[in-house]
Image (cartoon, rainbow, N blue to C red; front, side):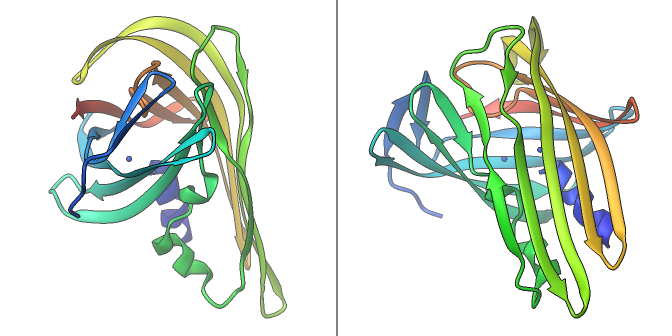
Length: 231
């Protein structure tokens, strides 16, 4: 169960609405618009999909705030998980609220423990340049369950822009930037569970989400996702 919880978080490093739109850092943020990503296992076999929709766009001073509803589906089309991400943009950088990485279903594992979290948000610049080093991000949680300490830590570090290349995926062909990062995760609930991974993501200015992501462990591909639709 604990390993499943960690893997669910990894898969996530996506009502009726009135129309409202804002432009920020080359992004057109319109309520009701969205995108879809298909998931694949290491052998390229379909492993479900994630659908993302911009639910709300507001202004707060220099920032444009937007909330994205995500729903994850199995390969058979069954809804497995829902979450809401909050992001903001000031024209120079787009920020993903790291608290969004721990959704309500995952929080149920910590019920009754008075878990206290601290966060360092994930930042994406409006413009990329090969050789750039991006800010680390983290989620840290601590509590006590009886006499035993409980903790959850996720650290995304060594975020580097390594190259620029053409990338063709189902959603189209893009001039993409390749970003590499290390992800370290540890959860202690009686005994520690650790998982260290490496991620590769492809991004381009003007698109909110990753074009493609790849997850590796000990140099071996675990799975990948591709952007299939933007609407």
